[in-house]
Length: 501
Ligand SMILES: Cc1cc2nc3c(=O)[nH]c(=O)nc-3n(C[C@H](O)[C@H](O)[C@H](O)COP(=O)(O)OP(=O)(O)OC[C@H]3O[C@@H](n4cnc5c(N)ncnc54)[C@H](O)[C@@H]3O)c2cc1C
Image (tube, rainbow, N blue to C red; front, side, top):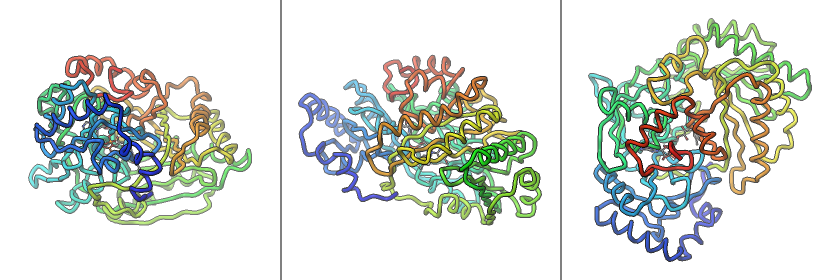
């Protein structure tokens, strides 16, 4: 949703924050960090600057935070100077790339951090021989896909929203409709330039600073500020077939078993048949139950591939099938959004999301409990929806990368559920948080024999740090902690769920 900055400033009370003088100690500290940044020629927006309010508006208006200042560097040397200044004044640091963190972690996840806004690092270059892309850390996904396609018909696997930043996305996973075919965005990273906690600028790859390379790909926000990526691009598919099968709404007990049957058939198909070129998701809310996705290939091949799944379903009510090239398919799945993005972003939402990574098929018991909760949620305190994305299955390439290839820990996902509740504008009621907990529990508690985890790109700020570490990193956490202690012993790169908190 697009808002005028003035409206959001009013809603969040930012006008008061800017007009009323901060506490004396904060003011003194701020002028010192600002002085330090200015002395080092780092462009900076202090919290008394007229553009501070528009600079710190988060994508998720439910999680506003107020950094002590925003550094807006243009070079890796300036990023380094910003980190050195933060060291001098004992400030926590967070980088912001596209600002789409579900929890305002690009702003620091608390008041008073130093934000390093990477928006000026916005470029995409393609080597015509190696087909390796060099991408600035502040580039948004829409610019990435648009540029790569126009530069040479190339592509990457990544998420659907053109406004999401490449850095947060690629450093914590990066799932999209090409991911079963090519893996996550993270799996295409060949090399990164990164500024570390001591201000040094290093290159990381499989052969250089290997531990750091491993840690950054899954838990990047805890280890440094990436300034540029080298990514292995792939040839964009010639054709994408978009499809939506719509089913009736669950209003009775028998409808619930009908939906359980549909999802169970989907799981069976995923585990035995679904080719890697097929992206599939369940999209459901109070009055919607749809299986939708994209097949990267011809319509004829799609018809053959999908036939066994459709045959296993009870009749669907409607079917929509459309075809386009790679770029137009990306536009269509982003609901017609323009791919190239402005430097300053104006879309926002007010929401809480949770993810559930299901490593194995859901039982009839768990699905019945979950869909039953749906049926009884017509009067939920907040509007909500659920997407269950097929990550795994017999031919998926997400799980074909070994677990120790990167710190990203949720490769074993069969389905990743995203539970999302939104009020569009603040306030978001406390009853909405409870509703979301209950929604998640309706699935998880009904299948106690399974160890469910969570997806680190769908940050849930209601989790404690230890739960976040367990759910996002599992058995990778101890190695991450060891690396954190060696490269950032002072916990300079910090958010409430950072490694080591
Ligand atoms: C509307 C919307 C749609 C989405 N769709 C998808 C989807 O289809 N698939 C999917 O997988 N995810 C999706 N996401 C989730 C998205 O991938 C994450 O929120 C992602 O982390 C956002 O990255 P960002 O750079 O935009 O956010 P930011 O808020 O800028 O950063 C997110 C985190 O990364 C850190 N960070 C940012 N830049 C750097 C850097 N240069 N170096 C080190 N750390 C950095 C930040 O400090 C923060 O902790 C979506 C999110 C939204 C809001």
